[in-house]
Image (cartoon, rainbow, N blue to C red; front, side, top):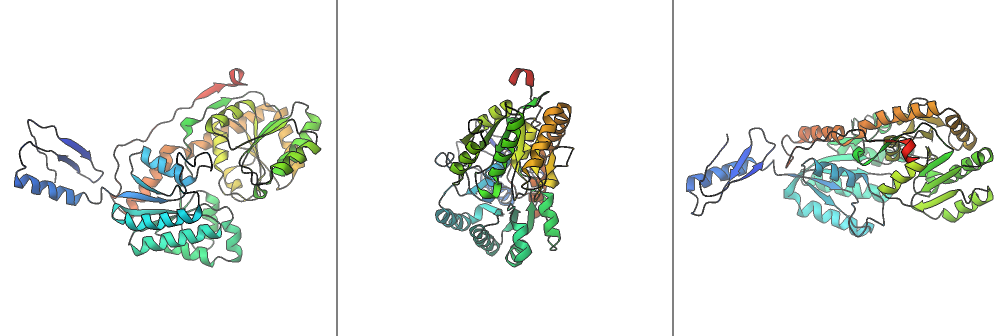
Amino acid sequence: MQYLFFVPDRIATIFPCSRPGGTLVLFFHYAAMHKYVWRAVQYRLHNMKFCLQKILIVGLFLSEKNRHLTMRTAADQLAELLQQNGVQTINVSNKLNKFRRFAETVLTILLARKQYDIGIVPLYGGTMSYIWEAVSSGLLRLLNKKVVLIVHGGSIPATMNTSPGRYLRSFKKADVVVCPSAYLQTVLQGYGIESMLIENVVQLREYTYRDKHTFAPSLFWMRTLEEVYNPAMAIQVGGLLAKRYPQFKMVMAGYDRGLLPQLQALAAGLGIGDRVIFPGYISQQQKEAFAAGYDIYICTNRIDNAPVSFIEMMAMGLPIVSVKVGGIPYMIKDGENGLLVAPDDATAMAEVIISLVQQPGKARYLAENGYTFSRGFDAAPVFAKWLRLFNHLSPNAVQRSRPALKVVHRNISSSAADC
């Protein structure tokens, strides 16, 4: 039932509601409301209680104070996606200190309990992450909230091979388990855990596709400078390429976790110290600039799940050469949207990079297929999956202030103008 009231000397305020048949019209007259009108409004408000619920998202979020100190997380990107599409969220927390973030998470779950029905909790591979997830999910269950567990940790499959117990307990307590990659989905299926595939979102409208026709031995590497991402292998690849191509150059972007001096020494020892730059963590604008000036993206990781950097590079038109580890083969089909080599094999990686330099048609083919693949990670298809999940867990429990599924058009920049 709908209630619609007209008042000649007062403008009504309309609040949209996603509940079927739901349009609430509230007004305030100069005189007191008639008692029957007020009872009708109270009735409509009562029926809207599920429409006004928000989504609680647990994770690390950016703020003005911390945005230059940490990388953006999947939780922060998810919150932005939902908010842009009219879904209100409660985000906790933006504290960098793990103990303060933990305390704020617990308090928010308890104090804001009347504002949400669904809580989204991430699970990474570390011990602290597991404790954080277990406490958060436990509190949500005690409060009779729906728990959505997102599995992010690329190291979780290896850990489950030796001690699966604690993770299995977490998975079985969740109402829905979400995996950002088919790789993790396959691993969990082996333990009898069903999950929903929802990719990490990438706002593709922020990226410019460059249709390059030639490809130089100029490499783009982007990850944290730490052992798990094996940056030394990238330096070794560079050393091999420099012997053949005097014009070789490489940028290695990412936060330093103590390896920078060692990597700089390795590059100097191979005679490429002046051709490898380390800009640290880079902004979106810097990514665009490096994608314009460098032609091939390489990945040397020892462990990975579904790297968002792959989608970013595909969206900007760079062919990808990567090691074959973890969930990467589920994203990169060798010879179709990228090239794969064995882990720690610098010689093999250098050889396939040379093949792309010598065969620009092949490199362009990989780049175009990569761009097509990246479309599945855009805001519209990813949001549609989340909305279906929310409606499945609690029909009409999501407040949306406006519909906003956006169509992103391909923004193409010619290589002749940019390179």
